[in-house]
Length: 243
Image 1 (spheres, rainbow, N blue to C red):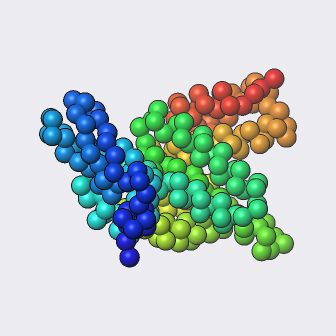
Image 2: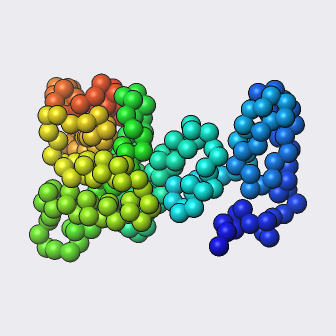
């Protein structure tokens, strides 16, 4: 079965269009299903400006469909995965808006820390979205689950989600390595782990500060002891209001 988006039987009047080469300005005729087209003016391989590559993060035929894309776009495939993981997280929690909100906020903080630290966006953001995916355990017992039990459940469900989305095994292992002890950071953590940790710490400190406001000295201690990265410390200072 062909992808409906690329099957000419479903095409409309705008399936063939012209676009200017970004290099020399020559008009290039694109068919809707072309990923790239060679410019007759300068010879540059130009990417179809109207093609949506988001499906590449989960489609089993993505390698065949996108094989002609420039390396920089192929490399972005892992980054596209984070959006699918975010959706799976929301479907998992359904109407549990508290846990959806936690995962979303942690991922939002992580997205600001990652570029400053030079970490992997795909690994960090997937781990951020999945860090509390085991929280449903709390609804299955009268006894609150331990942090280790939450981590073990996150590993189990996180692996299921990433496998279903056909994430690369290397990426999956890196995400799982973070989820495995996300609430128990050690002394020699990876840069990706440090970014997730700092994003989670900002969220946790926001919650604590709302319940019982920190003094300036208490907050300074948290900034000094709880964070791995300078970017995390700086973002915490901007995100948490201390009176």
